Length: 329
Image (tube, rainbow, N blue to C red; front, side, top):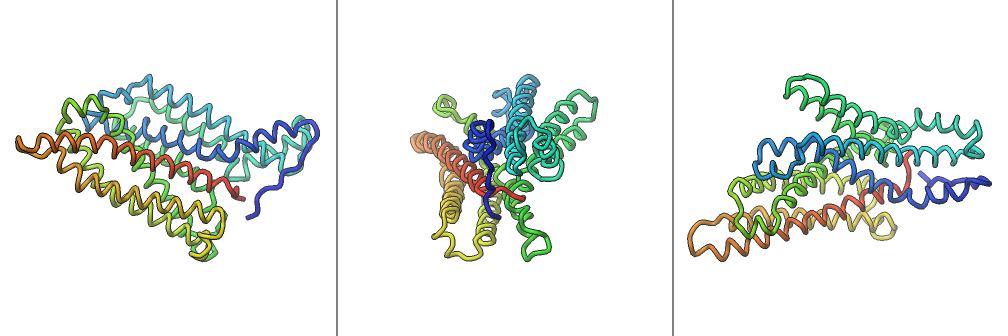
């Protein structure tokens, strides 16, 4: 699909020029906020019930949950409707205070995936808040919340390039499935990683790392390796389907970004394997002679986790930039 060509409307061009300037960064920012919502309202909250080391961070408190929901709701309202206004103005709607412009706003909101996402994301967050006010069995509440969080994350693959490929075309449904699996794999990885980075601060590690925390890290990275493999594999598949030939990854701008993203994902997979099989076994090694090695392994673990998280955030930003280079139909 070709990039949108925006018309210039006398009297409103500076406003829309500003929106177009920040539009390339809206997608990465929206992904970061969505990841924070899923982590704080879902992954970290559930993990805190099972991992004592995570419980001390206080993410599961009702006050933190409420502040996150409110901030994310306002953020998605602003970014969603900024993009809706850009689409409406692209239809040569005339001045923003004209009837034609607002009719086009209505059309975009209810007939395009990006328009539907503009009001669906805040609505889902509102539903999460209402869920806390209803008396339900804990298990049922968790299941409903998981469904709402999954629906929030699904608004991203369905407002990206995967939606441009009709299901009737070759690899149509495969593209949509790959994009969805890709995003959910990164969500689980980044969410757990950020939680453990927050826990393994220098003071805690220097004073000794509790065995439950080491066990939690071991379980997390055991699961992370196949999750990262799924994320890397689906990314590779989508890169091939998007460029249709491997050689195109080296001769186009977005192809080079895809190549960098794949290389960073491979680095993250390698780093996760090193943490799981080389670093963690030394952190809780037994024996008096192993004391110096344990301290060195703890220091390496702290910085390896932070490096892994830094790679994850760079991948997230690159993914958002790639998704905003061409807007879906």
